[in-house]
Amino acid sequence: MQLRIATFNIENLLSRQRFGASARPDSAAALALFGFEPPIRDAVERSVSVILEDDKRQMTALAIADARADILCLQEVDNLGVLEAFFGNYVHRVADHRYGHFRLLRGNDERGIDVAFACRRDLLAPNKVTWRSHKAATYNDLDVYDSDLAALGIAAHRPVFKRDCLEISLDIDGRPLTLFITHLKSMQNGRDDGRGRTAPVRRAEARAIRRLVEDKFGYAWREHDWIIAGDLNDYTEIIGPLGVVTPARPSALDPLLDDFAVNPVRKLPPHERWTHFHRDWSEQKKRLVEEHVQLDYLLLSPALAAREPVAVEIIRRGQPYRVPLDPRAPDRSIPTLSAAGGRYPRVGWDRPKASDHCPLVVTITLPHRRQPDIRRVR
Image (cartoon, rainbow, N blue to C red; front, side, top):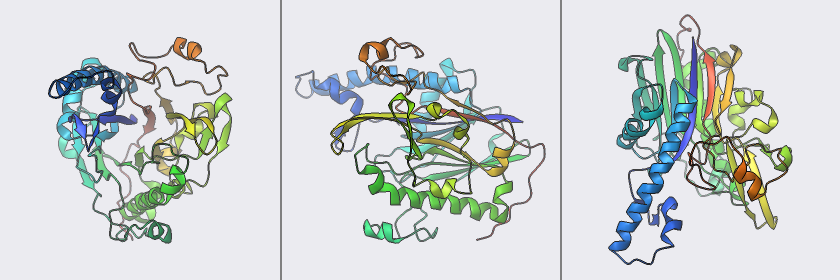
């Protein structure tokens, strides 16, 4: 049995006009054009946000429909209500599949952006989906506390996961499949020292996920079907201009990649192994830096990875025109980029867009019979 599994950071699917003390990022730039005073300004802000959000969510829905996934692992979702409304009002207007079995639990993120699960309604019965949140697990609970965390002033009794690790167990016609959906600590918006400074936190999260897998399946973890899915906010290589690939190890993801899970994106040619594009001024290097990197992952158990074929697709038609879809292209000028095709209708130079991340889709094969009984070994 083959299944298409997708992970997608859908970028701030929110029901709130604001989070925290700052304005919605999509509306802030537009509001700079207005000199209105409250309460008129508030009404203008709402109108601008509704227009921008509607365009964006149509493209997000197109990207999900384009993935044609049986199972969806999503990040940056406000709450279950807004997720269901988004699928009802946007996704189901364009998708061939009808999705349900939605799962989302409030996690630890201070902005309230959570990880979520959805799958085809007809894939399995509601009682064949069970779930468990690991948001309360501490560094001590999962034995991942170390001196690097202590040096950052992080206490051992604090929760490991900055959002959550949502464990979803599926019974698909007698074939078990377990998903660990997560969204690891960010790299602080691309600051020069952001990746290194936050690496100990992500490394602890990665070690914690590995511990959860090993605890669930015991010594037989290689033989079971499981997937670690989500925005892991780190990479092992950087694809620069002209498609030049630079290794970026060590990585905070090494605990998941070294003799453990398999990254099927590695099957792709080097210039295609990316799900996120970053272009910003580097104060350290005193120049603009462009990077194509993989931040989004579907890491397969050895058993899943060994079953061929494992097909991989990264959907980039929702990316804005400022993003070079082929890192090897030598011409990064505005006329060339703005004339490039391959996008959904009404995608803009910077916005609207489907997301700042690309959906990653992997086709897996489940076995024809049940796997061995789970042995719990710590």
